[in-house]
Image 1 (cartoon, rainbow, N blue to C red):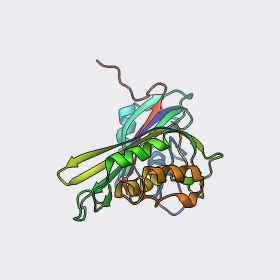
Image 2: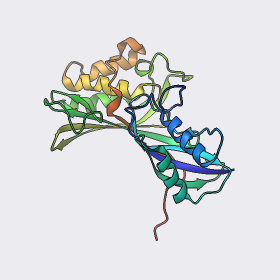
Image 3: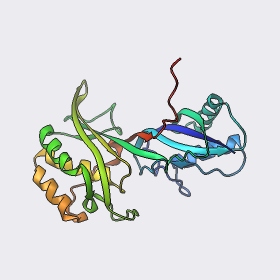
Image 4: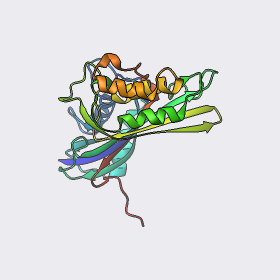
Length: 259
């Protein structure tokens, strides 16, 4: 068998999420169906992270095993052809050894969240951002975000259906920036950790938006964290502002040697 790493971009709007489900469109299902056009039979691909319904990706990573050896560019092009018309694109494809595992070899996952602040309805950015009408206090959100960085029991920011064995995780970074654009003010959240709990990032952003809007204070964020109680969480942000942006490995399989 020959193993290939795939870097994948997708718009999550029409999907129930990454994971294959019977009778529902999923990103995994689209790619596995494309693989079956290239090699008959059932295929199972493994991803670095299982994004939820409506969540997008700029840098999802998965691996697949094929009996036939493919020139990476030809495999890349063939998969993109057979993924049509779904909003899924293989943006890179490289051969890897059997030691590479998209999920278990990952050292860090990076998520990106976009909030758009403006009163007119979003048109070009609709479905790609979480729109709020009022401005947000960047400094207050940054102070509240600092409370979350490090190793904590994140029960408050964990979905009740989360299957992780422990709510204790280490959050490496949670950086927030304000970007002035032609279409309004955007607030970008850069969230990094080795692994995340179910709905953790969206729970963070929903609570941080409350801080930015002035409904919560940074101390309220600390109180919510310390409560270790899901009921203490703020509203969970919608999925369409969230992107799986990058997955880090000890050796980047997609790195190119400069020529």
